[in-house]
Image 1 (cartoon, rainbow, N blue to C red):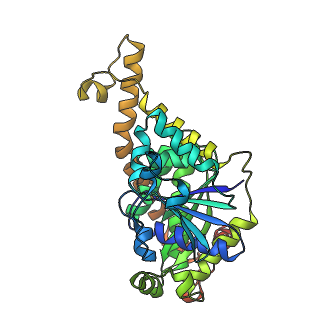
Image 2 (cartoon, rainbow, N blue to C red):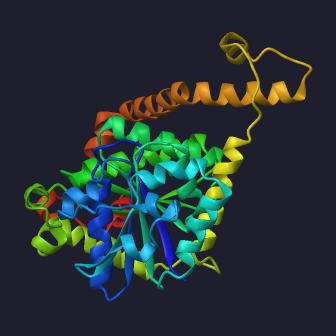
Image 3 (cartoon, helix red, strand yellow):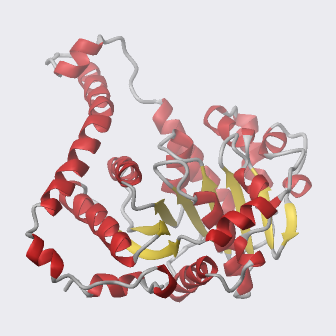
Length: 351
């Protein structure tokens, strides 16, 4: 069965699609059969990075106009690509017939070793449904505070949805090993303190001027500059994934979609009722059990944005209080040209 991995981020502009595409190519270079599903709504970033602009996407499959084989981009540099685009936006509101069309389309899809979902940034129901139905999640972040805050927000939503597996973290656009280590440690300490879930490091991608040149050329940097530092980082991530397999169980792609759509259906069936914002925020007691559940749900949603920022700021302040002398004793990590590709080795230096 295919190893299904969702690649996501809490914030746009962190290089998620670039990593998704180049990771797919790197896995294929290791002799594996890979399919990349472009589930980034409306932005079509895979199109921009490859220069491929398909005329049809998953929407045509959902409405029974075309088969999956009609829209799939076959053997692009050794990988297959499924354009999702507007079809992904519609999966939250499918009729029974359309649901059947979607699930049936994947029954006859050929076997893959890896099936990667490149999602939109943020915490939309579609993104969370992909995450919850996948075998693994790769969360992309940078060292910027806003990226870390949004990454934490994504993890918080997953935690509340009872996601129970470790989320793999990749720090992108790294300018120094020290900055990458500090960003990951901040995120991990905050997650350990406030959430009932785990994160683990998967790797880093160093800042590399050749990445921008590849975007302009519309050729993935892994293909255009195979020896550049960013490509070496991607290769290290791919090989680490291969070296640490996960149990995929008996979950072909049609079962993945069934899980995904079931999750979305549950979100749609949350209790609905009329309640004023003031009552929702105050959490005022009511004798109606359904109303209590509604108020609780609204409170959770309203507090999410507020608490996310407070939690991450609190963790950052704790770090800033560390005496300067202690910080000076911390190991000095190499700059980008000599940057270690083994993220976990940095963490060992803290012990």
